[in-house]
Image 1 (cartoon, rainbow, N blue to C red):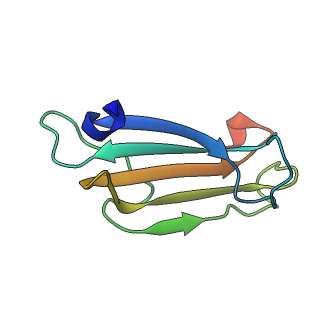
Image 2 (image 1 turned 90 degrees about the vertical axis):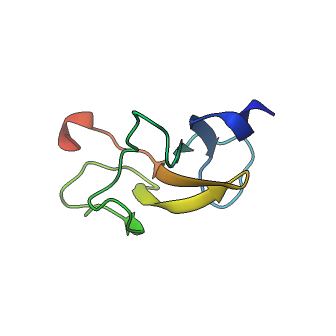
Length: 98
């Protein structure tokens, strides 16, 4: 019930990259940020306010199966306007993302 009133929520969910196979080894993480919060600016991917789905090039990143996907965009969460930043999948080398 507290999620309805939170300014920021982190959700850890099963991946959507692999068809249902029981207990997930790969996860999807969503950062849900309420819009219009005083003294808080939501993070974004590339272009604030846009809807972006990005799958990095497999030749530039060391990603084992099932790879990785990012998403950013506006949404509604418990009737609140929010921005969502999501990462689904896995990557092998963090230094390649920075």
